[in-house]
Image 1 (cartoon, rainbow, N blue to C red):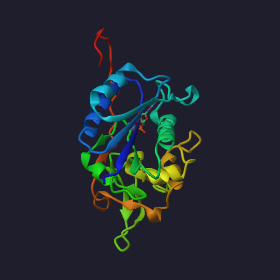
Image 2 (image 1 turned 90 degrees about the vertical axis):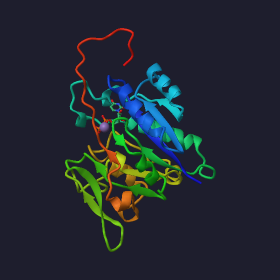
Image 3 (image 1 turned 30 degrees about the horizontal axis):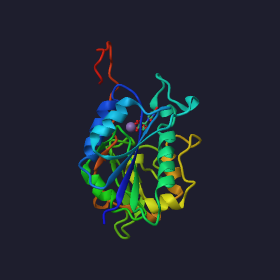
Image 4 (image 1 turned 90 degrees about the horizontal axis):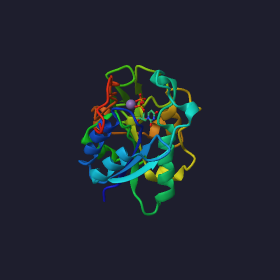
Amino acid sequence: EQPMVYAVTPTYTRYVQKAELTRISQTLALVPNVHWVLVEDSDEKTDLVRNLVSESNLLVTHLAAKTPTYEKLGEKDPRWKKHRGVEQRNAGLKWIRANLDPNKDKGVVFFMDDDNTYSVKLFKEIAKVKKVGVWPVGLVGGLNAEAPIIDQQTGKVSGYRSGWKADRPFAIDMAGFAINLELILAKPHAEFSYKMEKGYQESEFLSYFTTKDELEPLADNCTKVYVWHTRTEKPTVKGIIKGLEV
Ligand code: UDP
Ligand code: MN
């Protein structure tokens, strides 16, 4: 029996939102056994997202959890200034823990940001995760990809290739790991936090569940890239056509 992949996606209102969500929802439409936990960064769910969800034919749990104002990135702030997606990923985890039963539900939890690019091949890898699985992520960390280093003798992860803070306990992007639902449910206090040092969100979260020694290298022993940390350029919008939802 195929485990369910719970894909937790933070999303927020901006010009490119509908384009991003169209792209990833249509990727997910090609994936069997996926449950999309889509969490809006807003007080209430928006019609734009509600409509996109209902047209998608996917199994979706649609939630809203707004980032507190003092933690929110300002319009002119550089992206690294604040943590992004914390509130939403935690809301997704809360829903998972409140609604899934370790005795009945078999699955894997994956944090799927709305702006990355995902191959359908990635989801076959995620479905293999027994405890915590890892794989390379393209176009991140100051290299062409960030990738776990595999010890050829033991087949285990021995370190990480990254061009940015490579000495992190787990130098892995949010898109570079997935965790079995059983573990997520067994460690109910594990969550993301605004207090973490920049770039340590993944490391701190993973530390609740595993050690480097236990990581399961996927994507052909971490030799393939099936996900890219793409970022969409902010468009210059000089005028608005009324009545046209973009
Ligand atoms: N995000 C959000 N609210 C924000 C900024 C970002 O919900 O104010 C979401 C965003 O849609 C994405 C995730 O958080 O799914 C990570 O944000 P982003 O892609 O901007 O971060 P980066 O990839 O630059 O680390
Ligand atoms: Mn991003």
